[in-house]
Image (cartoon, rainbow, N blue to C red; front, side, top):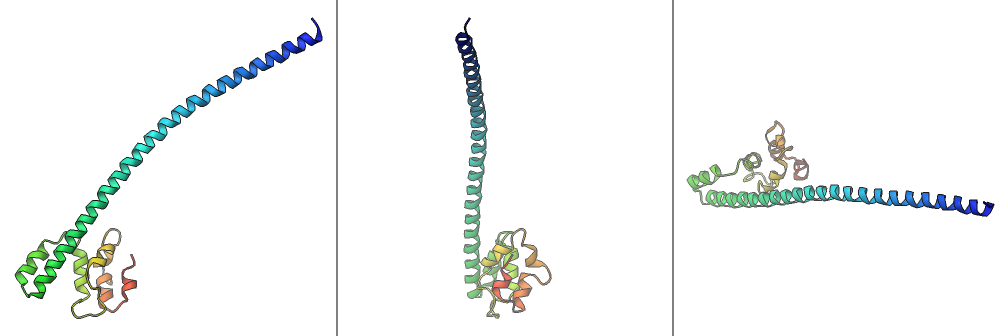
Length: 157
């Protein structure tokens, strides 16, 4: 056997080992890609479910806000007409989530205090968790506005 032949055999063996290693590495990469594609699909499904739930919650919140606005407008109309029975009827139908904002707004004496907010609707934004404590706490939102605190300071959660 010549030097040339043994050298060629060695190169062929090294080439074969490198090709075998490349084939195994390619197969492993394909396997991993398939596994991670499955994980990505599962995560994407979870994300879509969360997105759908968020959309439902947003739609419900918008509908509840419309109910608050409509009921409040009817209460204002009844109060303006001095129909206390009808005004009480509407007030009893305020949603539990709207009532603290309404009470905080009434604490500002909106019919006599020019610096009071025009409606309780901006108060709804800060009378929700975690800011709802500010509506009823001593020195809270309603009391601060009644004492002449500026609106921009009072609305900060």
